[in-house]
Length: 571
Image 1 (tube, rainbow, N blue to C red):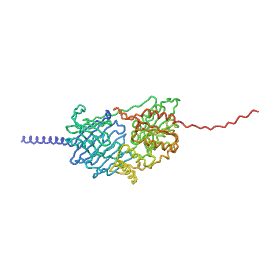
Image 2 (image 1 turned 60 degrees about the vertical axis):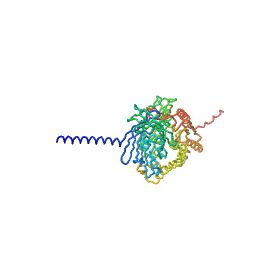
Image 3 (image 1 turned 45 degrees about the vertical axis):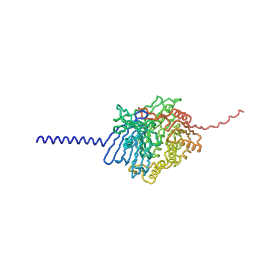
Image 4 (image 1 turned 90 degrees about the horizontal axis):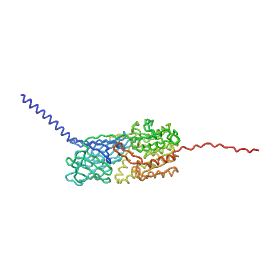
């Protein structure tokens, strides 16, 4: 009897062990985890973790990107759902920037895709983009989108093989572009990763309209080992472990000025920023009241440093006798509130509150205040100068000033011509813009559910403000700066604004073009230690300072001239 009990116990133990081993095997088979390091121009900037799940009905790919060194976006999450035949069911992406969330969604509904992009206050939506069966999602800088395509590449046949794909552009407000992704097996070679020497197959990546790249896949299990895009300096490498790093805070200080963190009341919100001011007695006259500048950012989840540009301007001007105020947008950085429901009117109210706060500072000469605005912030600067006659001067950098309700579509057409989109994709982008406006016009509430997601509508209902009327009211001199290498705001917009100012008789305005500069007027700095930032060009900074010194002056006080009676003659 004892032998029977021992046999039963042994069978039970073996069964449990087999169950555990089988469970572990199936779990590994149905769930794979991959880690990758991301570098730009040789510096580590982020880490990606990818999970792949396999069930009887579908394939699920998830990735989590941590990119703390990014100048704006510092992380994202991606999810791709496919059926077992690799047909797209859905795609979604969440991007994180300065505490704000932007989202992308794409759903396949009977061979057509509906697309939704939510970006702070606005959204873009388009339905029924026709696609072929077996269409993949692809993003050049997202390794998780490479996996399904590589799993469908026939390595036995090799050579050149193509895949229908939806390409998502870096500008996440744009709907996907249909493109043919081609992979071509080039050669076998050994790749050294960390301390491992791995035999790989090298594939050439080609997409019409985009620079080529290279992919390396392990010969043993066809897993993705490395991606290299030489044109952008991007390299994504298998790491076999999670690498977590944090950028160090970049200290910008000077003995010639003091910097302090401030808060002030905006429209029902507490806003936070940085106020820099020359050290007492640093002016040639030794006085305590200094000329001042308010900095106004463009669109997006921007904080006070504005990707480095505003920090550069503040440092330079405060080193040269100016107080400067820069602040975080509502719901961004240290400012309270939520970024999603904010409207242009809310932003303008916050900017006006910042001007009011600046005027109350004891170190500031309220008769010598200037405004410097960038990109979309130029419109707010024009309105602010029109509403406040005591603003002494205005500088508009890469101004995106809309003088017509049709300017949004005109901007898209300009961009399409430069980037060679093609007529079909341009129509798709314009239709997405029109569909969003149509939804806003037909909905009475301030929000609507689209593809199951809550979208805010108030900013789309904002009535167009004809800035020509505001320009007529400005008495302050205006300086326009524009880089001819700007890929976001066409240089024609500066020329158009220059013409509008001339037509309104604004004789005190000028335009300076920089043939070698882009949208942020400087070089993107990436040292692998600090968060990436734009370092403003020295000539631009000097031009700003010199122009303010000449134009940001106190109005001349006209005193009453007393009539002097002529002296009477002595008899």
